[in-house]
Image (cartoon, rainbow, N blue to C red; front, side, top):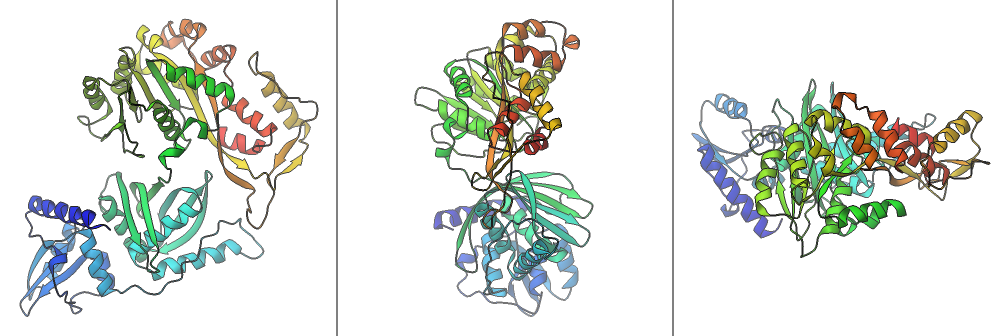
Length: 538
């Protein structure tokens, strides 16, 4: 950690101490750090997140952190009744520095995690799970987190899942959209890990509510390697403890470009036309993990130039982009939510507004109004398809002719695994699959080039020692619903008379390729498998 960052952390701890009415101690100014081994064992110091800083025959002062629970303070006062017990707030880094004295780093060999298929004959995956679990059980709490993050980055994982169950916690990585188990931890070790996560993300380990936090810091492992963690942390209490999902942000802003999205030529033409238009509403639709945010950021990055004022509202801010005003939003707060912040932002005279997500009626109405008053508004929305997004929006805002004039484009997308070209294997599908493909391709809109279906060839994943699953990375499939006269006519009718299927058929007649059709076309080109398309789309 840099000196400036450490100074800022100490100032924050000092400010919190005033709020809590506690003394504050800057441990960097303690010349000789004495260890008091008679009070608590090392596991107890980890579990309680306290450090005995000063003691004599009658007094003991414990250093506590922002995440030390009130119950812990009461327990310490009761347990050491023969002493006058006092408490002082210290920073998290101060606590970690002291723990390195109480629990010196052991020499640990950090084996790389390998994602492999289950081998029922050799129990290969079980052996790997045991090996990684044993490694995690040897190291400090901060090292556990840093090691997992480092391995997740190497495997190009998007998320780390910490899932509690009776007596143990399972750790899984999501790689190319699929979850893989990598380790299991006993309860006592998981308490240390989730305590380290909570401390770094500034959340509580005992909260009864779901929480969101962010970690951006550099860790030094016991082998002296450094890991910079940039994570969004989501936690929720379960019957066995606190589960967490750590979303990894490992993109560099130079990768957030339209040309990096794998758009087809026609899709590039649509996006380019939209971004050149000064007003309107653009919605990116899809479930969590479908790449909506990356698409949104890439569009904003494309628009970013000195002639435009661009403001984003995000919960949380995921990628920091120079030249753009990025505003964090607490979507759980009515006063600080998207709708209220959006109304405030309009007074700043923006050209382009990015709203991280439209989650409620108030935000939807405000975004629509903004798009009608000279602004280009970009946002995400949860729906199964572009047509479903339209009907949901129509249900939310009612019969409003302004809605019809404001929306420009709804694009729904999914991420599917891409076949490894070096190992994929061609095969001829059976008649049932051929009939299904013919039916889907036959529904393509007029003017779209149809593939030759005389001799259908599909592909399945092969295997190699370097790539046991046969996939490498992910690609997006998209459907682009552009507003057209037929859609506008349908939307002018009472909302209760408008159906998702009717809107989808009108969009297809206007030239839209559906998600299903886009996926099948990629399978016919050998970019993915037909099974992968239907696994993702359903």
